[in-house]
Image 1 (cartoon, rainbow, N blue to C red):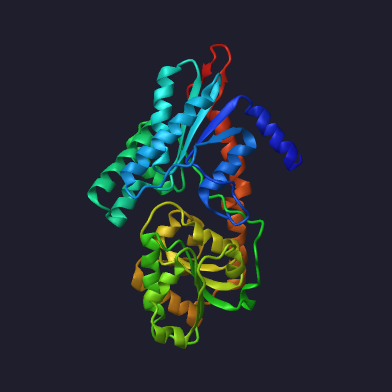
Image 2: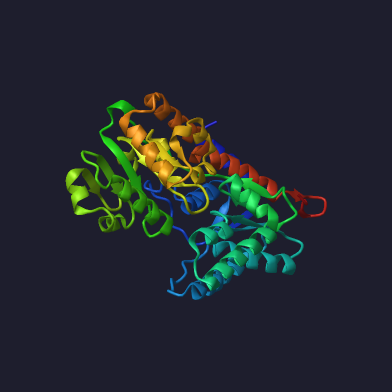
Length: 386
């Protein structure tokens, strides 16, 4: 069956279904290779009518941001209801999940004859994130509260890892409403060279406005200090901050390029041998590691990352339990101590990404879950209970 026919088939199955998507997001461009929110929006549009929440003003105060999101989302939401038989309020991450919970709970009470469902797409446990980052108390309390309430109220909870599922299971008695959807990595613009012919020794890319990525950058900068003749590329949002941590002497002794934002990271990663990912804090699945794997760059990473990508345990030489262990493993890979078939590992990583984490694989899985969560009992005109 062609892709066009499949799309029509799925739309017919979801006829009459309206999905209200929060927060606002733009249409994904070809450069959106793993950004979760726009890619989820794209998947949902393929199988149902989707209305996205309007763009909310961005205030400096996080409390005001939440209020603005709730107000702007509510106004358009009630305009879209009309006589819809089936409605999904879909909140991706926070505070969108909390906004979806509030709107869904109110309209379930007001219109009991309609099939209204709440779906919360978590990007990782806020409780775990608070433990790692130790934000101000008020932010910690509010973020954990909205996260736990969203889990309790949602009819379907999408989580990125099994570890998040275990954490969230403590919030609700219903264990059947969790779905693990790890990632939606696009693999149609992959650049791949044979591992042994690659020119870049190491690479690291990230959004460097996120504290765990800065911590990883510090670890990398300490490791490379004193080294010479290393070819490494660092890039991503605000990556010029790397100049604060890598000394001029280290830059002089090595071929280190700090590029800023790169639209298609595959161009660099596909020519990289090892991907440095000393990520010891944070939540959810580490999509930057999946982007590296999609191109065959071999990650040297941590146990935290394997919570989202357990397939990496096939090669314990790639997994570190602490910073000292990570430094030692990088040194051994660099010196050729590990007698591994890196070319074969590189190709296996590409296969793992395509089979388990790609956009094409997981969009079909998500469509099936959407059909199940809004099934109608035609005899009584209401949603079937799960």
